[in-house]
Image (cartoon, rainbow, N blue to C red; front, side, top):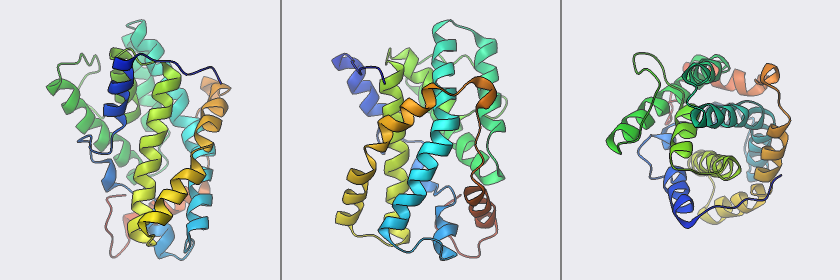
Length: 226
């Protein structure tokens, strides 16, 4: 992976963009984790780690990061056709209604935020907007390098997922921090893996994730939207 360098301003913008306090509702989505725990697939911290590792390396790195990279490249070139293609591709890669809801609901919230911050957003707002694409647009507007933006995107995803597991397993606060430390080395691995993904290969096939997400849609009692 290329060396990560950034200016102080870009680093601060990245911290803002990746913060769990960003008003986009990322905390509201477990992305199938709630069903996996309810079904008894996940009962311990080490099983949470395995579940998240699989998603990082074979879902997020295979889908979200390549789309993030192409979004930032299209934004740098002001290629609005390519931006629309990235948005359509991101939404099409969501295997269930709830996974698509996660992306589009957070995308809608991110769009409102970008408008309120006065950042240009060239995508039409009449349809669904992908969060990962809006994240890429914001990162490019703030002149954040792709490798740095990808690291921030992954950290935000991981922190939200561990927070969900903390409530659902449940985990203690110390266990949650230990889990974050354990999984941190996977983030550069995911970025390296994503670098070799060609556009025709973008997408994932984690059957367990798809089953858990579909099961969550009709789960009797739940805390999370997905």
